[in-house]
Length: 501
Image 1 (tube, rainbow, N blue to C red):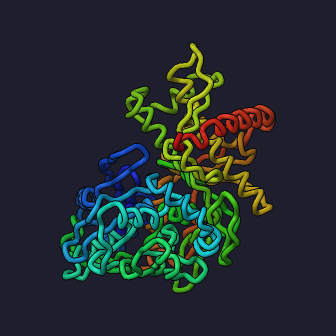
Image 2: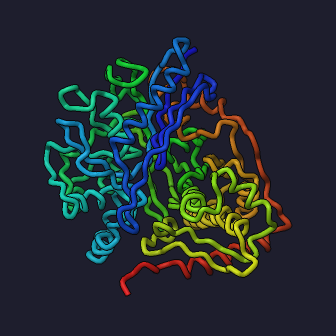
Image 3: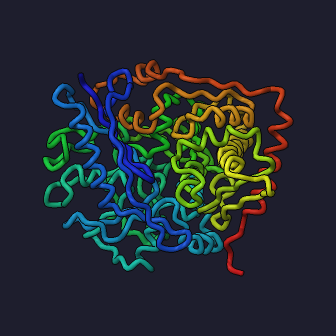
């Protein structure tokens, strides 16, 4: 049997999955890695540990597949904006990776806005001046992190780092330093209209353009594996790369403009395919490159970025000790009919779309003597749906087009309570496919398309099979709107909290 391997390098762990021609999961392996929080609002990863985790899961996957499977290609998908800087000669990181959730550059972003740079940034990148994105993290490394920029250093998001290691790991071994437009478009350094790195933006953030990876199509041959790669050795084509949310849009077969998906992961990211014409910036939302299937062929997406959804479940488990396993959240939340007025705004690292408030902080309101574990757990689940509605409403208002249906995936999408509550909040059907590892599947599809394993987008569309579709309760509209209004009251109390004085 021939398979395509996807490496899914997420925020809390890495997964390797083998997919067959029908887009079905043949085998997989997963490994978590360490999260570092050196100061409040700071989040870091050890890039070497990420690579070692990838080696582990590839070795385990190879052992499971044995000799009966031909590996056609490898695709990579990743956590996007996280910044990795390494030495080209040694192949070693020069600082811990600064994670997309990190808020340390909020004051720098404020300064850039005050100096009038936001319109230029919005027009060229489709993004906002927020600590979320890579360039502000690089500026911090060069000005406060003790890293001296130079031609001996390479920058990349996690996809570039893994591609470098998979293809040799050092300049002497011929390692490939490249990325794709979907990841490049998350750095604040890439002009999404020209499809190139922007010298003006590089100068604004103090990033030498020589440190940046070559930008290649999302579906195409990036390189081949080095002999040191665990399990598979040398010669396997690496032929697809996309940021995790764009990969999920691709894996959900959202190939037609207007099609929309939401991934409930560490955060939640709602993307709408808006076609091949780059739209003008929209307040509260991001414009991003979805993918490219050939040179100078960019497809765009409108995105709402929600920083904390599944991470709030981890907080219940690891921070509060209210659950011992993430799988407990659904049954615990369903054990009560309502939150009894408890509302959680999980702004642990600020608020993303449509608020873009890096100074917001997590807020738990409405607690009474009757409040317990179940009410708080249900408030966590409801917050996922409320934040999604915030983004959907903003998209509808800006585009003039209502979302007709929402395709969902990610770990939390297994919860019937979430799907029903989401459908009730949006007033539209929510559909979950049979294969829910759509982020990894999208990376596999991009790689497989490049190598002829799949021949067309139509063939991939045929692989999308509905598992569950949940319709909204039309008789609960007033109740849903009242809960949403209460949510907005809570958001206002969470906003602008972590400011001096």
